[in-house]
Length: 113
Length: 117
Image 1 (cartoon, rainbow over the protein chains, first blue to last red):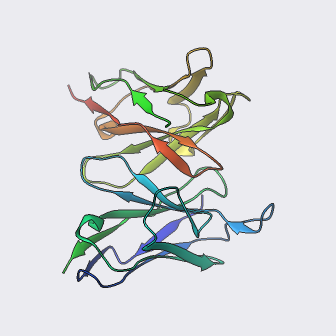
Image 2: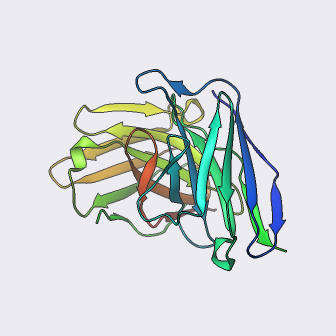
Image 3: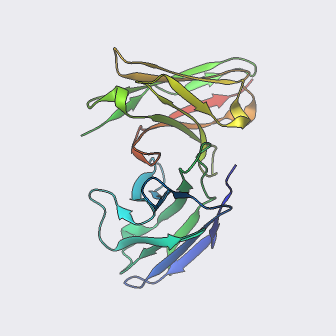
């Protein structure tokens, strides 16, 4: 199985500042068909199901605020939240969907400093 | 707007089975994979398996192979996840999600399964 490792486990950032969340895959997740990385980012707030933010490592899902952006290549990926808002407090998960089983990282808990 | 509506909470005895349903409200149910993901209390997300209804193909995580069965009824737009030989560690919220290429774009509300004697 592909192992997904997120860092840090928790992060506290001031309102209006930038949050940087990292995700590393144990092997390449580059999908040769379209030359894109099979990485998704999800946001989960307490008592709610996860919500897709980013797919193909950098493509924003419909309706996601543009302060959320994804980047990365190879085995290292980043979710950046610019201009942090109070409603962004949540746990964020990365996932690889290059091959089954589609594995998740352990999550990064984002809080307000 | 795609909505996935799951069946209600269940309380089961150890050793028994549970079957959770996931009904799609709209859209082309058969064309998109449905994944099942679980989340134990206070823990992260764990992918269990998926089905592509139009092809009938199913993939399971090795951890659950032999205990989980994922099926789909195209006529009603409903997917099912059955987990057998339940143990206390299976107590969790079980989610279904409609995938696109593997990214889960739409999620059900979750079904709490509690395993307790």
